[in-house]
Length: 92
View 1 (cartoon, rainbow, N blue to C red):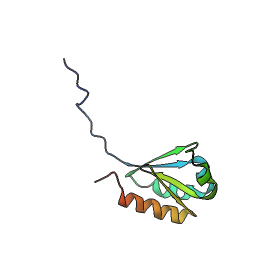
View 2 (cartoon, rainbow, N blue to C red):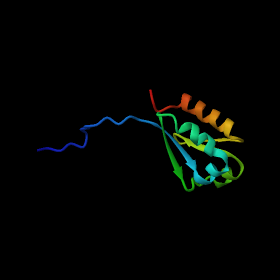
View 3 (cartoon, rainbow, N blue to C red):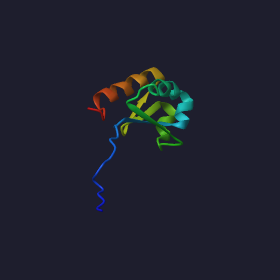
View 4 (cartoon, rainbow, N blue to C red):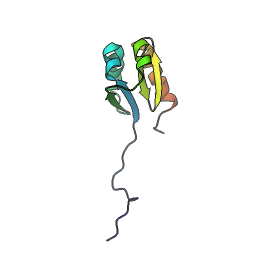
């Protein structure tokens, strides 16, 4: 019996990746997190630290599909994240 690494038995749906820093969540990004949690096309991860401390001190931010998105408040951050997801989604 031959084993193939290329044969797939299951199809895995791609999802957009959004990453939040735990410290930044406590500073106000949690409002955006709660809204995005309802979307099924997004996989959210929380990191203890994303090594963006200088940004974290001054802005709310999220990392969307590898792109750092920052804003002055949660409303703007949500708007920027949604715009980034519309323009650069991993879904076709």
